[in-house]
Image (cartoon, rainbow, N blue to C red; front, side, top):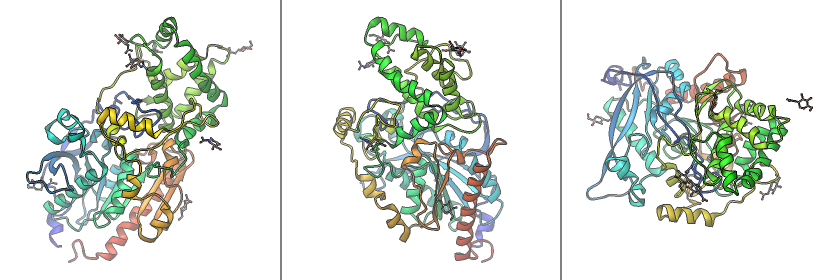
Amino acid sequence: MASLVANGCLNAGLGLLFIALVANHAAAWSLGRLSTRLLSHPHRLRPASLATADTYDIRYFTQLVDHFAYHPHPSTFQQRYLISTEHCSEPNSPIFMYCGNEGKIEWFAQNTGFLWELASTFGALVLFPEHRYYGESMPFGSQEAAYKDADSLAYLTSEQALADFVSLLTDLKKNMSAEACPVVLFGGSYGGMLAAWMRLKYPHIAIGAIASSAPILQFEDLVPTDTFYRIVSEDFKGESSDCFDVIQQSWDVLDTVGQSEEGLQSLTNKFLLCSQLNNTSELENWMYAAYEYLAMVNYPYAANFTMPLPAFPVREVCNAINAGYNNTDILSRIFAGMSVYYNYTGSATCFDLGENIDGIDGWDWQACTEMVMPMSSNGSNSMFPPYTFDLQQYEAYCLEQYGVKPMPTWITQEFGGHSIKKVLENFGSNIVFSNGLLDPWSGGGVLQNISSTLVAVITEQGAHHLDLRSSTEDDPQWLIEQRQVEIAHIKSWLSQYQDQHHGYAASS
Ligand SMILES: *[C@@H]1O[C@H](CO)[C@@H](O)[C@H](O)[C@H]1NC(C)=O
Ligand SMILES: *[C@@H]1O[C@H](CO)[C@@H](O)[C@H](O)[C@H]1NC(C)=O
Ligand SMILES: *[C@@H]1O[C@H](CO)[C@@H](O)[C@H](O)[C@H]1NC(C)=O
Ligand SMILES: *[C@@H]1O[C@H](CO)[C@@H](O)[C@H](O)[C@H]1NC(C)=O
Ligand SMILES: *[C@@H]1O[C@H](CO)[C@@H](O)[C@H](O)[C@H]1NC(C)=O
Ligand SMILES: *[C@@H]1O[C@H](CO)[C@@H](O)[C@H](O)[C@H]1NC(C)=O
Ligand SMILES: *[C@@H]1O[C@H](CO)[C@@H](O)[C@H](O)[C@H]1NC(C)=O
């Protein structure tokens, strides 16, 4: 134990690189890509240009492609991870690990300022492992090989990803003689789901988890299927019921205009599209994506997560739509709203609906296997056209696309979800489920306290993992308080660990 002082969490043994983070991350973060709305509905984001820089080292770790079977000649791949020992100043430094989700890991490191700030307060080692099949962490040598077919994609599962995190942590601690250092997990969105699940599945590896905007209940019939689009719609209605009405009416208008060649031509012109429309489906997807992301990133200050946007962007979009109050042409008003989302900086010369920088559809595979999140749109509470969740259609898409049949009940078998309060209150502990109620994913989140150490921290005005972002001067009081509650829980996990493993640091 004494070796921790000299050789523990403090001593990573390698110099730090200064990395100016210029992420060209694109679409991946979209938790709901395939699973929202109809199947052939990929969402595309532009790369956000990112500003802050932090210091970390980039390393690679050899992982088994398959953790759960014993192959005579097991395949391995290089998992990328970011590590910072900058803030470790105590021998018993905790390790703060962000559970990488569906995208390049730098992008999450960049957008999780809260963890970096806490690392400085707690003197923690920071770890951001990349999720397999995203960013550079590709099995079979290349992205092309990894994404070749269902046989090569078969190892893209949440279970394998969690096993990667566990192997990495265990090996890293051994290398650093830091076996006794407590690990606290963080994650947002799918990463938040992974953080919560990892704490439940691997309590010997991590002492607690901050699971932000983690929709672990967005499966089967755990929440009504219309929840996601109901919340998106409520966000818009909450700003203005006229805005909601105009959007709700716009879909029929779009369909009608899109029936003829001339109509498609006029839409191409009206929406300043870069290329000629062949039908309205791509234009509709582009609009869907804008509304969904606007609801998710409806932050109380100007930010650049999916797009550079003003504070309360839903309000700004509705203002733009409502400014055309006397304009009887509904689609011109919609164009004004879209321009706030897609052209806030004024730099777009035309709109490219098919823009896709990343090109990785890993989430589509995950949604076609275990991540089946049923979605519908209910005419009575949604500004989107009504539709029901159709498992047959979903299956048909997945069979055609990948030749696999989704397993819609697997996640709840593997990780639970049914009667979550009853099940977890007796054996689970040390997870904070944080949610902002403006976030459409909050509907699938844990919104009730389960026990004194499995807690729901809710903000009425919060959006998608807002709490994980860096603090700013514009943070409202409720956000500051939300983070303070999270910090208090982390403190109590650490001191509980310290009490139980007293002397795990220098004293022995
Ligand atoms: C631990 O050290 C070994 C030997 O240097 C190295 O191969 C391995 O990648 C290290 N583990 C981690 C997690 O970096
Ligand atoms: C529409 O179809 C034509 C050929 O039929 C193609 O050249 C064009 O790129 C398509 N437009 C879009 C927006 O995909
Ligand atoms: C609509 O147009 C796009 C772009 O040309 C094409 O990829 C898609 O298949 C078309 N959809 C339908 C339903 O025709
Ligand atoms: C809308 O029209 C009304 C009456 O025609 C007029 O008083 C009002 O100023 C117009 N509003 C805008 C925003 O143009
Ligand atoms: C984007 O905004 C700028 C500035 O308002 C404008 O000149 C340009 O036409 C807009 N682009 C599109 C595609 O609407
Ligand atoms: C639609 O929403 C209403 C009111 O929230 C609810 O009573 C009804 O069951 C929902 N219908 C469907 C098909 O989900
Ligand atoms: C959970 O419990 C804490 C106090 O322990 C309380 O402050 C908080 O409001 C509760 N959360 C919910 C969603 O009821």
